[in-house]
Length: 99
Image (cartoon, rainbow, N blue to C red; front, top):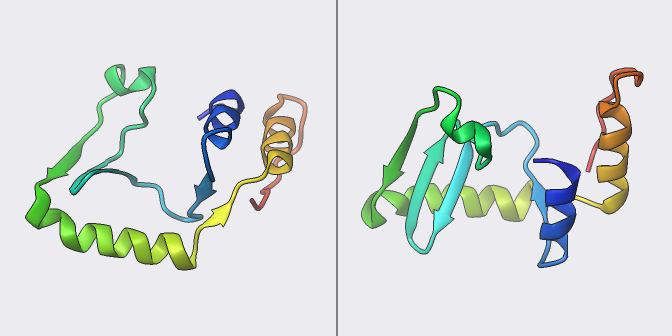
């Protein structure tokens, strides 16, 4: 996601990150999509794979996600977004920024 998207999402609610989690987990009502795909234009331009879980299959995935979300997720601040943008510039040295 780019910084503009994150800032727009922040206007609607809390945005958090789960460091170390690469899989994308989309929870819609009681159904879960777990995938390698980002919800961007690359979704149709790359070879991505995922699994759509029905309501019964989703229970455990939702429980795990909620546990991680409540105990491990860190809120992303506007300052962190600005630092990520600064570090993403071609002239910036590599630097890991915590949320």
